[in-house]
Length: 312
Length: 312
Image (cartoon, rainbow over all chains, first blue to last red; front, side):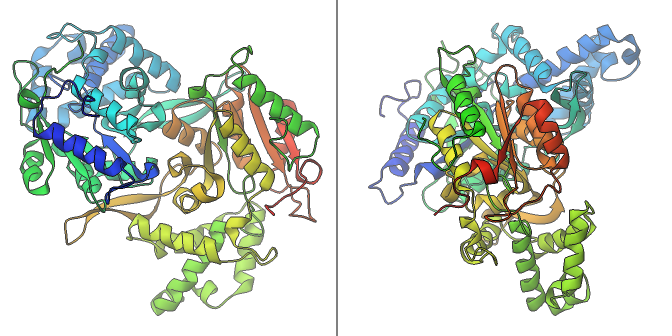
């Protein structure tokens, strides 16, 4: 197992991770955890893949809003279709600036346009659209399809855990069904082990009497973020994880839930401090970083602890 | 595989089941389904275990209501605590009679007392209570703990599917967290693969700062029954099953969803027609039985197709 995290530097976090895995996987160790309870939950945006300058799914949202504005001129009279259609960078910049300050109003307007764009369509059609976007749309800075902007060290961690008998789940504040389009390909995590936020669904039968699950534009509550994460984890898994990894304040409750498990646990916080290879930002992670030291969570410095950031 | 369903008679359903499993599991067969998509969903009450004279979970509800009425005299002034505390068989009999006729009013009153009895407690405490009940409380007619009143032929079917690479899920109209107390022990189905109805949850931290998931008394919508079943299946699994098994009208939408999968599928309907060894009733299954023949679903006669009903 000592060679199982090749993209990690030989610093404290790598040792802490390997010691933890070793202890809970060894039947002779006092901290042994049986495989059925050896559960790890990973946040997605900013933990497993890029989340700047905008959440990747929000880029898909803008793409879908633009497409709808082209196809249905009548929606251009209102936001967010108007701003996206007119490429109103002042309006979009304001949304981003407000979001950074914790004001979600603009993002919710974008989200409402996004869910409206797929209202009433079968879940398979949404997934096909998400897959095409993730395969083809490129990030402006890194000039690569979004699905390739995963963090290589975190991929290695997921696979090392899986090889050590862990059940690795994604618990994304973002949309579960968006991620499911690629999780098996990019993470080797089954779609059934992908938890996240969602819209509500509706049952329908087509003219041939075939049953379908259709999307609605209504958000399911609670979303899978902050205090919602442990609730989603309980609903989907039914067990408290022994390990959790996140990168922002939205992951605090999940980290507390996992590290509240009896016996040895591991809480991991990815710290974005590498402006050169990725981004450097503490915004939205201030409380988590503060809590980490007194909670014993391992803070991973992208700059110091990772040899590589993205897959070669 | 020909010896894998020993409690099934050599009648049509056994042959249909084995032919289906053989076809979708054989890479050389035109109907081959890769393991990641080889998904089967099973209803629980009346399909995997006994549901008469009352749903087993409703017995747990009455038990919990009685306990609360003993501990908190003030609740005895109102229903359902009053009737349960006073052992008012007229009131309880009316609930059962109304339910048979499709009037859910009384059952909803019982359910509200049941959810109230566990309002605000950690999910682990509810599960411990459910487990103690399922281990100890006995069915009046069969004189056995409820958890032993599973259907032996259906257990064999679940295990045969699992051995053939199927991912077998439970999708219960009843409470998911109630079933999770015993699914691993009695079915060999992981709790994460147990889908069902639920109450909503709340995040909380105790005096030591440890995070907990608490129950509320509010029902999650939609419940996992009727048109809600395919929605719950999509949410939890993210793929359309190729096989589904049920026994009542509440399973129709799930059966349509699974048999709407492209290629070979299997819809199974357990018909309770064995008053001697179990019960004979079509109530609540009339539409499903009617649909079965024109939909190609396999109807399993408990009387004719099963050698044994319960485990020895």
